[in-house]
Length: 334
Ligand SMILES: [Zn+2]
Image (tube, rainbow, N blue to C red):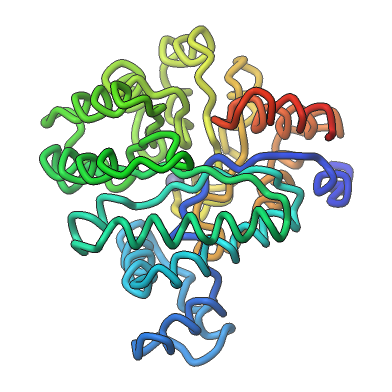
């Protein structure tokens, strides 16, 4: 029988969260507050009702809920509030650094929002959290494949026109059904030319070729999820040899039925293969999870001991895009 998860020990480990979506991090109480602020009818009147409504049945209904939350985010204050609220939650679980994925294609192209206002709000929330909790944070605007390559370039134009020091990378995130038909690689090349790092969702529901594509065409330095890579030993070898980490979220994979049950999650095989893994909560309130729950999943799945938990926490620090000095400080326990 597995030893009970040492939650206090796991909380005490300095760690980074590299796979969490800002818009997917909004908790039910904040959703209700934002709905009231903007006169939007909420699908329930209290936190328990929202929690119930958030239990979805498949990727399309998850996206419905995700974009309903996105629709509540309208002003700089909204973005500041959600960034600060999530960083408070992450800090309480021992995170010293968070890299927020931000759905830039949605805000810039679909909603035609003022990116300056979005970015200014998020940055204000990050700064306030840094002052309150000492937590570090960086931003990864995600391009979305379902809008097409033209839209990805338009979103990138806006992101690159106003680069803030907290914007450290661009990513790819969203329904991925047109990766091969269109050229998204040129958008990632532009981002790199502008000095940004590059990451990509891949191999969540899809097969190993998605991961290969993200490595070869996007130059992804980290893969969000990547569990599909285990279907092709060549892709596994690419990840290991190139030192590309996978930011894995078992709770999300279960909630979105990317795996039929946690018992068959490939996390143990990923660790055995030598892939560097970090843990993230993806869209925690929507999946009924949080960062420590992901460490608990890893503990149970992989039969870890405390040193195994420490390795996962250290991976998240080392693989982050924070400065070398900051990473060395966290590793030294400063
Ligand atoms: Zn994600």
